[in-house]
Amino acid sequence: MTTVPLYRAAHGRTGDKGDRSNISVIAWTPPLWDLLVEQVTESAVAEHFASRRPAAVRRYLLPQLHAMNFVLDGVLDGGVNSALNLDSHGKALSFLLLDLPIQVPDHMTRLLVGRNDEPADQP
Image 1 (cartoon, helix red, strand yellow):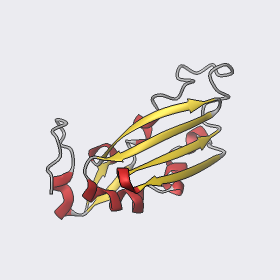
Image 2 (spheres, rainbow, N blue to C red):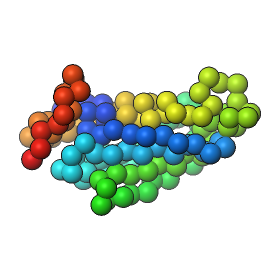
Image 3 (cartoon, rainbow, N blue to C red):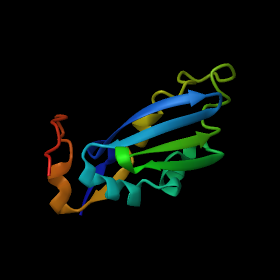
Image 4 (cartoon, rainbow, N blue to C red):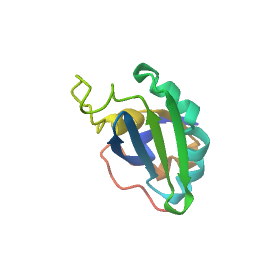
């Protein structure tokens, strides 16, 4: 097994509404999907975002897209109109999630995006 940051196996997008952030995680290649479902769980995300003190974390799976969407409540310091932080929209939160460490079996490391952001090999 090799430990890598999530961004080597997936990319993400972030949106927000009020004090709620949603973060999509999309596998770079379909063979990585099951690995992501196993490891990028509600509890793993809640623990990874512990410093932001989410009130709730919910995960929605989109298997046809090899993607998942996380909804995090209470992570934007009250939202755009209430927060004093620099990123009250939460756009950078996908980068925080994409830093989550995951375990990849050695035989699957060829599917990961390289350090130079080279495209992943196809199976």
